[in-house]
Image (cartoon, rainbow, N blue to C red; front, side, top):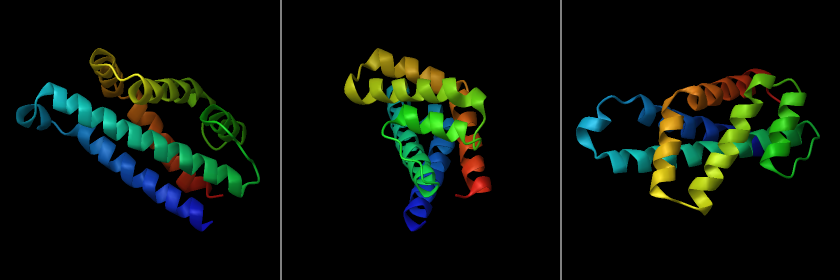
Length: 137
């Protein structure tokens, strides 16, 4: 349980910092667009990684082992912890994270940044955070 609690707290903290960057209207007045794209995509990466680890630990406490992010997300949906309609967003997050980490390209980062800004990613992350808090393993 302690490992899950740590993973959950890391996810919560990463999400709060991610949301702070997304929702801060002063950033464009202070920083260049390139810097905002970089910091936002980096915060997305941290949030995604901590979300993935929290989900994996949550499932482990329920006796479910998963070996990939996709299988972990499928299992937590199957368990009824998070809504089924988030599956597509979660799978998209996997691809976005992979693109940022493995084949970083400035234009691709800007495209991902625009996708992050449309709120669906932040809303899905918020729902997952709430669901993990509510369910408790």
